[in-house]
Length: 276
Image 1 (cartoon, rainbow, N blue to C red):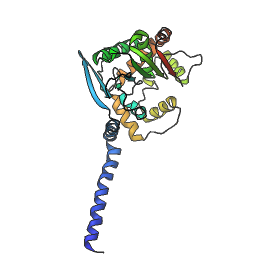
Image 2: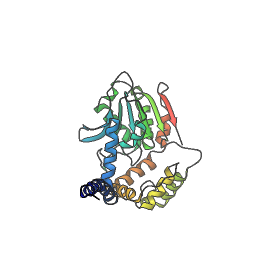
Image 3: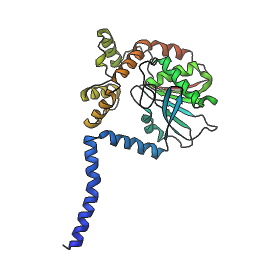
């Protein structure tokens, strides 16, 4: 084989091998880097920009796309221990001419974390209202969407400030009392009786606990790579006590409040309720 041709193959092989090797090494040693790049890529592809809103000594982190227009703006509230980027998988199906805002809930991701904060449903609702006023979102009625814990807060928000919400979408909202208790509620009641707060299924401490949490929360079964589970556990380790405090606060002190508030949501608010 000609030497020039051989050199060409070596150069081409090396060019391909370097990014592949970098990806493999990053996946096993620094999965957080790949995950950050992944979310950054999706935000950039979908036109979402990250911004911070400072309200006194409190900081909110949020992503947004578009500007306020004659159409209602959309504010999205994520669930417990999640973050604003969870909405990217839904945003890709939404028209690009909508004004979208996804905020990190109090104590989550880029928003201020403080154990002195009020993490009850009502307390979080007041913080979200503070955010809405800070960015002047309530100059006209907007569409409020919430899932799980975010749905809990969204429902209370609509009841407290009905004039600000033109449409309310609740996806598997927390806080509603059902005739039949779920496996999760049964487990939580047992833990509350034992006062065993280090075994809360929504706050896993091991990869096995992570797998159990996904089985408990997901209708469709899927397996998360071990490296991703390890990254998630390391990420939540620094705030695990805050999450435990937040979760106990929500579960023990706020379960009846949303149900009572939902009864008072005024009829002019259009409600779409999605429940598992």
